[in-house]
Length: 190
Image 1: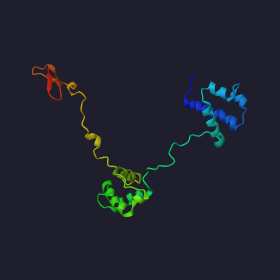
Image 2: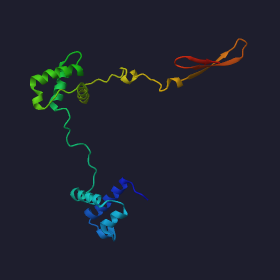
Image 3: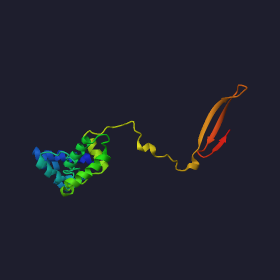
Image 4: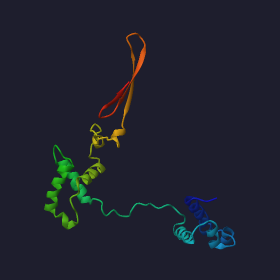
């Protein structure tokens, strides 16, 4: 039975905790072939085994580590974020990203942002900063931009619509009228 990657890692960790932390006799755990034979039987590379062993010796047990990067070099600097938040409060009326962007250009020239390694962020980044600080109002009544995209059938000559209407004739019997429509012409009625 083939084991999945997660089950293999759990197996390695359980064996290593028994051997390294709880000091169980390695010969009783790994059997006659030792570590190499155990790894071959369980289809685990010895490099992975020893990497796990070093980490358990260092930390006492294997815990998944965060995948978050240690630094975010492209994140907007705190000084720029502070300036964005201040301009949001200073401007009267329309204090959206467009006007804040315009005002930040003047501040950048006056205060020498380029010497600090800063630049004026684009409007999309200004909106992200404002959202992060809770200064943007969500307006669900606005029509989403995706609704402006026009639907177009891939092959319009193959696009037909069939409607059926039941009508009562003058003598009392019922009849069904079928209409076959095409977007560019009326195909048939019967």
